[in-house]
Length: 507
Image (cartoon, rainbow, N blue to C red):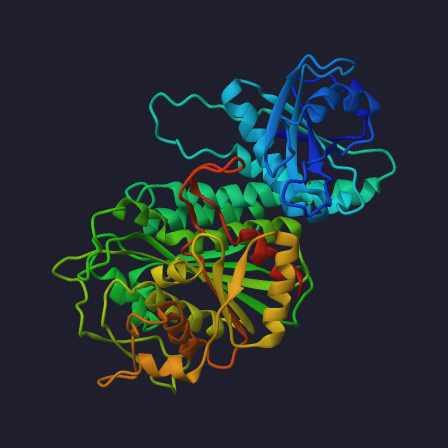
């Protein structure tokens, strides 16, 4: 998708479609108060062209509500699309992001390949943050998951122009615009990986895709397999992969700004289960096909590393992605087995893990991934994984779960959410939960029972980070969009890429 930034007056722009935002300015809380929609532009000609529909009462400017006007009088555009933000008092840059995605998804099936999107004029909506959000939203809206349809008709928008009103800080807007292209493309890179079926993206192929991306953007990279896992004594990671004919992949990416040899090293660790059958503790058949997205945490780390390499923050970053298939076979691990995780150093024994349920495999690969990131020098850790159904039970499809052992690192991540627009809800940790994963035969067991399942999974990971400041993101509920929304297609979401990026940039 070609993108450009324009400062031309709206009414004079010749285009197939001009999208303008509207908001409901009604402030009364009375139950029967009628909406008062208003365009968020000072362009008199555009306002005049939309006046009749705004006065009709048919259009209320609800969030992502659209109305299309053909051949609008006094406007050079062939079509005028109004996209609602909802209540003006509650308008945010994130709602602008969704509105831009809505505009793109509105035009795609209608054969319109050219779109001009007007930045809103409102004191509540800073131009630079809205510019970034709008471009990100456009890229998100342009993605569709129908990669393998034999009759696929590519409906991608060919040209997206963001137009800004007079009087804005042009340099700030141009910088935000350029950043947003990188971020939007990186989120879609993650989504393209998550969308791949298990036979088209094995652990080996994921390693190849990661290496190719790293070479393109200038990251250092290594991809290892079985021999390296045995060398490092990654018994937890290996135990998951041992039931599959496909070998595992240990993917390591490095970002080192020129001239930096001190300061923190941020460790990004991702679960990369390219297909999860549940192993011997096999999953039900219903929706098992979606378990191709069990590598969404690892893919989020790859997307974040792509953006980091191109945006060049002044902080060192290491990413470790543990990729494997979790399959049942004669060589698969069994409930009741005891595995030994990777030791942090040669003078320490690895933690022993009693396997209660082979479908609790994500925490096993992350255990060794977190230990390895620490061994490589990471001083601060963040991991992402589609880890537990229990987190979806707790938070639904609205928030992803977050956990942390350190208030300072959490404060940075929480602040990053204001920019990313993503929704994470912090859940507790505590000794009472840690008691649930104590094993009678080994150090810990890989499940703590039905109750508090997302929390006991986080407590399991906490064993392997020890005192290192750490954040755990359980993205099981948001990694896959169950039903299409006006601004995003059904399928992979790319969740956490933007939040991880902003957390890294905070350092």
